[in-house]
Length: 260
Ligand SMILES: NC(=O)c1ccc[n+]([C@@H]2O[C@H](COP(=O)([O-])OP(=O)(O)OC[C@H]3O[C@@H](n4cnc5c(N)ncnc54)[C@H](O)[C@@H]3O)[C@@H](O)[C@H]2O)c1
Image (tube, rainbow, N blue to C red; front, side, top):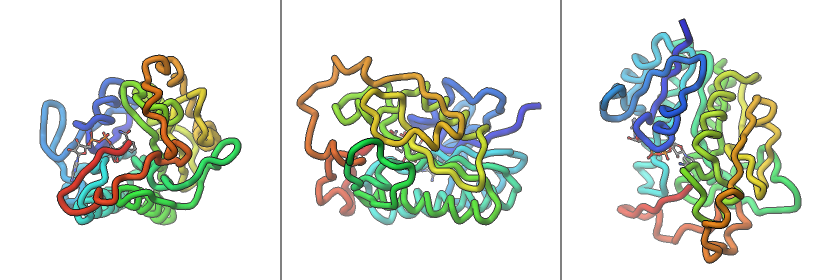
């Protein structure tokens, strides 16, 4: 019998990518806020629900979250409390490993220097959303020190194809996302690991080292889509990890804007 991996956020973009290419050697248990075909309902902010969902699982891939800059209380509730709840449930159920969907926006204000950006620049969020993802990294470290193996992925721009010049460096293809999850589930981890989630892009500038240690071997390159990317999308923010700054009002109540 193959080991069980609980997947949260299964109905979302990344959950759907993973569903299309599930990790070999694992039996996924798909969950999201609402039930759908093949997906069970489990709110990641509900400790009882998550403890039940983790029963018998060997690993968790935690993808559920708000992937945009949004209202502060909502971001804290879903991204921070939700991640803490998932980790606590996994810890209580003796789950061995948890993979967390972090984001480049946790260090979004880090500037581009010469050569690759180091593996683990200190938290430097560029938005309320980025702050919650820095908190996700810290939560992962905390629970790793309590005995879990935790892999946090600083995901770049995961979508079908890159659609801006920035994404020619930050793109993570759906197939490489699946490879990354496979490595995060099976690769060697001593406590906590922090890994950039990016494809083998010619214009990549984030360190591949932690991913390589985990056994992540990306195969796709955004350059193959470069001809279809509008050069007008280039901007000064491309020299920061998180790209262009969000508008000042983005984190005010009632406002959202997509980030990736
Ligand atoms: N897509 C990217 O390029 C990208 C980049 C960096 C980080 N991430 C992170 O990856 C994760 C997944 O991103 P995505 O693009 O698939 O987002 P998405 O919005 O498409 O999917 C998120 C899923 O989480 C579910 N969800 C929300 N609140 C929940 C709750 N309380 N309980 C259970 N499920 C809940 C939603 O129903 C949704 O299906 C997010 O944490 C996001 O921050 C994504």
